[in-house]
Length: 319
Image (cartoon, rainbow, N blue to C red; front, top):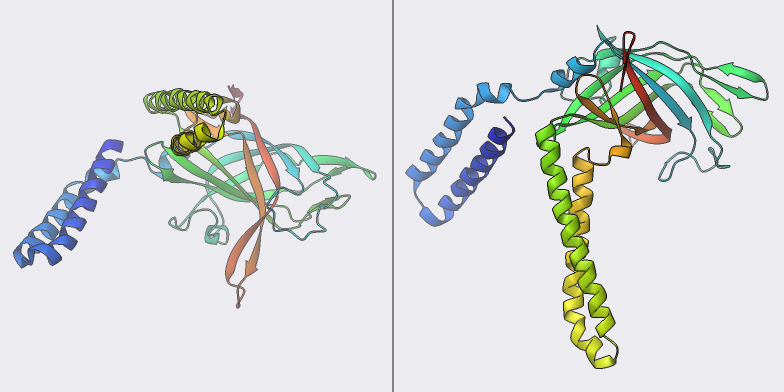
């Protein structure tokens, strides 16, 4: 299925390119018509096949009616656009035990309008908090009220079966600890997950090892070249080879980094979910703000991070 989409996209690209070139090189109306008809034909023939590809509902069916335990850490994170005096002390507001359920119920209509989840979907399922987290302050233990939200999965990289995992919950009363204030509003959560495919992951791990091996060889060459460059003339002669080796090193490092972002390869950063799913342990929390001349541009400002501590289906803990 993955190969089908990959090949189909390549064919489409080639056909479209041929159509563009035909207008300049072939000057042949019949050829352009033929190529366009061919593109329409292959698209039509594979409509049913494309319908079989992994969709958002596929991974949703894996987690529906399961529970997830979250740990929230509210506070300033690098790159946040929150006001400078917000959580400026570096303090954190920790909410260690928030359990939520991925329900099979449709969320409220008002919630389905949230573009943060997935603008291509028309409806979303409800996420229900099963616990009310608490924290300890000078006033003693304080409970933080959390109410229902919604969740979604959006396929982002088909070759890796990687999804954007997004949800929100409402915190109607907010919470405050020192100069850290969790606003009394809707809080948005963002992370990544995968449908675990053993063959796909093994192929990615093999490619990563190949890149790492090449990177080690390049770094060794750089080290040897630097050791030989002991005077002005040898350094001058080594300049060009050094530049090429540095460029190759940077490219290999980038390729390794991209693989680790696309595929679930960093085991310490991954938590196993229900029914063959994998989730990044840590994600970001944000509040929605509006910008632009008419205040119509949505922006999301980070207010902390959250961790997925585990999943549970009924009385069964997923591990």
